[in-house]
Amino acid sequence: MNKFEVKSRLLIVLLFLALSVSGPAHAETPNKLVIDCNHSDLDNTTTNNTITVIFYSGGVEIGRDSGKPSCDAVSDTTYKIVAGTSADEIIVKTNGSDGFFMDELFFYNADNYEDSTSANQTNFIGAIENLVTPVKGYKKSWGQENGGGYCLSTDPTDADRTWAGKVDYCRKKYVWNTSMQPSLH
Figure 1 (tube, rainbow, N blue to C red):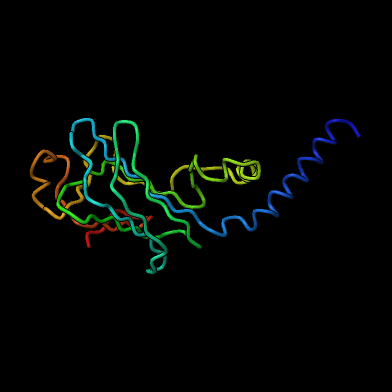
Figure 2 (figure 1 turned 60 degrees about the horizontal axis):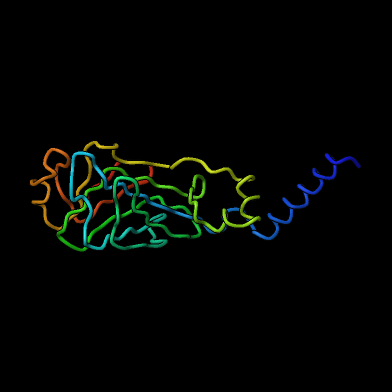
């Protein structure tokens, strides 16, 4: 055998081992919502309140993540879960009256998940999996960079202050269908 044949056979064996060790593709489905709360025309867009993101599939909650967001000019806030399926609805809610401005939101699932800190990218088997299952872009997005946004607050007057003209109202909860615009529940 020449070097090319040896390398080809070795690659086939490595691919087989990687797939057999990792189990079926996407048995556990990552779901991730990335929130951009930076707007070039606005200050004080983040919040001290806890933001909770609840992921649903077929009307059943499949997981939730929560925490205080930390956004700045270069980083966004990420909420993620791993479940047996992809979310078809996402609820984003706040627990207080300190307004949170959301400029853009990006939803990722197993078909297009992107996470540079995942185990799949920090070991050899993960590197092989990434060759077999290429990373794609986000599944759905809402908002526009430095456009009008969404105000999350229990205080509806937050929309009338410094964010006037960028948001029409503040809500304590938004519900997004991963294929449609947000509904106001």
